[in-house]
View 1 (cartoon, helix red, strand yellow):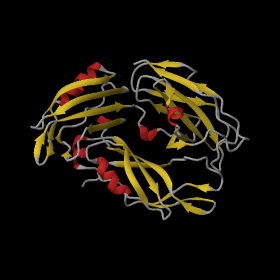
View 2 (view 1 turned 90 degrees about the vertical axis):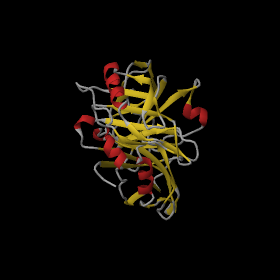
View 3 (view 1 turned 120 degrees about the horizontal axis):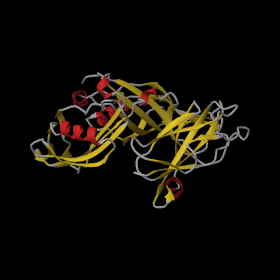
View 4 (view 1 turned 60 degrees about the horizontal axis):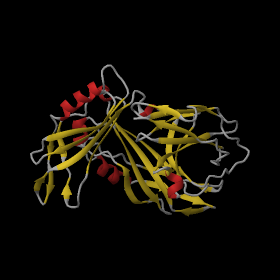
Length: 337
């Protein structure tokens, strides 16, 4: 299988409990890169895959699963690669422990026509059905002139491998989206199979184009989940938030918000935590779940939201030992479409 791509991988611990100075996260000792599949090479795919796993007491990966896939055969390739990784296990009080972890893999081509893209192709597969495989056709090129844009479309792959019945769910650039659909109509698939017979199958294609390519965001270091909302280092004051203001409203795609705050004296990094409204309640609170966050070194970072609804964010300072200080207040944002 070809390796004609550049791979960026970040290991992201899921801190389900507040960590103390004596806790240590897993560290990668050996890694192999996922194969860039022939299907992805033909399509010129740039994408991000998030893998969840547990690092056991011996440093071996367990319970490896795809949390956010990309399609094009890359999910299976990522799982095969992660199974070969080896870690220095996490520890607490000097003893090795099992640790839940995420790995974010960014696979990119060197094709300028697809710069800053993040593509995803998924099919709703029932047990026993082999997914359609793209055998001809490229991901639509970036808009000209360059611009941030987003497309989410549903379509059907027929028994003859021809895509049809395109239905746009979301699109930020009508002219570019129309061109993209014309190009997608020329795609050809090896159709889905059930017991060796062709099967009609519905798929969802998502494409985001960001002129600030994901791999070039210097402030983004790793994704994580954070546990109980209590500070561990009370000497670190809460960061002063700068922008966006509370109750800020946004339109358009991509649904990204750049959050900024003043540096906190004594902080080595920051945890930017976010949440979203679900059935009138904040998701993490209603589910009793850990909060989602990015750990960053700069005093700003960009969040990407999936839907048109309310979100909120706040910032924790982190000392050189990895302990969180006092959190800032929450600020809310909302996307109108």
